[in-house]
Structures are given as C-alpha cells and as structure tokens.
Amino acid sequence: MLLPILLFLGTMGLSLWASMRVKSVYRKYAAEPSLTGLTGAQAAERVMQDAGVEGVTITSCPGELTDHYDPSHRRLVLSESNYNGTSIAALAVAAHEAGHAIQHAQAYAPLHLRMAAVGATQIASQLVMWLPLFGMFTGFVNTHTGLILMAAGWGIIMLFNLVTLPVEFDASARAKTALRHSGILGAMNEEDGVNRVLNAAAWTYVAAFITSLAYFLWHLLPLLMGRRDEE
Image (cartoon, rainbow, N blue to C red):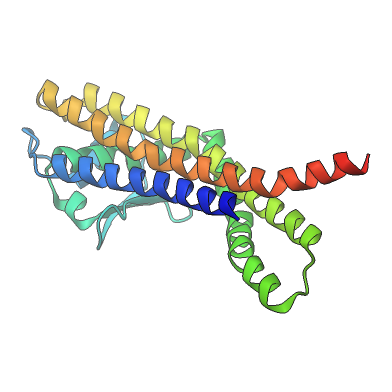
C-alpha cells in the first residue's frame, strides 16, 4: 500500500514543481518589457514571415499560458497577455508557438506523429482515469485484465509524451534562434530571459513523460513478473 502512495506523491510533486517553476519564471519576465516594443503577436508574425510561413492566423484567448498552435486550422493562439504584451515572456512564448507553425509548414516528422496520436491518447487518458473506478465498484474487470488495459493505456500516453519532447524542444530551439537573428530582442539580458522562460517550460513536458513512464512501468512490471513466475 505504501508504494502506490509514494508513486502518486512523487509524480504529483514533480508535476507541481514543474508547473510552479514555469509560472514563477514566466511571471518574472512578464513584468520585464522588451526594448523593441513588439507585441507577442507581432513577434510571432515576424518569426513566421522570416521562415517563409504564410496562411497562419494569429488570435488571442483568455487565461494564463493558454498559448498553443492549432495545426488543424493553421491557427496560432496566444493568451491575451502574450498577444498584446511586449514583455520578454510574451516574445518567448509567441516565438515558441511560431516554431510549431514552422514545424507544421516544413512537415517536421515528430509533430505529424504527435498529431496522428492525439485521438488514441485521448481514449487512453479516459481509460486510465475511469477503469480503476469501474473495476473497483463493479468487479467486472479482474486484476490481470485490468493491469493489461492500464499498462496499454499508460503506454500510449507515455509514447505520446515521449514524442512531445522533441517537438517542444525543437520549437524552443527555433524560437531562440529566430529571436536572436531577427532583431526582435534588444539586449543580451532579453536573450537570457527568453532562454529561462523556454527552459522552464520544457520541464513541464519532461515531468509529464516521467509521470506516464512511471505509471506504465508500475502496471507492466507485475505482468512481466507474473509471466516469469509461470515459467
């Protein structure tokens, strides 16, 4: 009974630490205006323009760190503070999302693999959420079958998170390079701020992968050990 609790607390603690860190770094640099005075929307447009990417709509949405790139509609969505803001954090986040748009335009393989896996990952997420409760209250799923289904579900989520790592790291690398060579950043301390914001954000994806890997192994190992015992 102690091991499941430690697993839950350990992965939860890692996720909370990563989330708190990115918010802390983001808010620090959201309070520091860029010397160029460009908004996040303008920075994203310039980054894509320099890369020869056309036809991507830039829009805003409410909330903090709700920024994302929607490949199905070729739409780059920035939170209102980053869309209109001229802070170092706004430039970093906007350029990162523009990096995803460039990946899409250039048919970056890991991005297309992640896009193809979205549907299966959503089903797997529902499975690992509801199967333990379903099995607990109905008893319709025996332990062995439950472990197989949970291992499969967490395995799909783990692979999705694994593919996400190069997608996010590459988008951040593209953002750093684009901001450095486009003249958007006005001073060396701004480049350092961009690096800190994007590096902090990377930890959230690392934490998600470690968490899914831990739960995948937690459900897989009993199956492997049981097979070894049978032999």
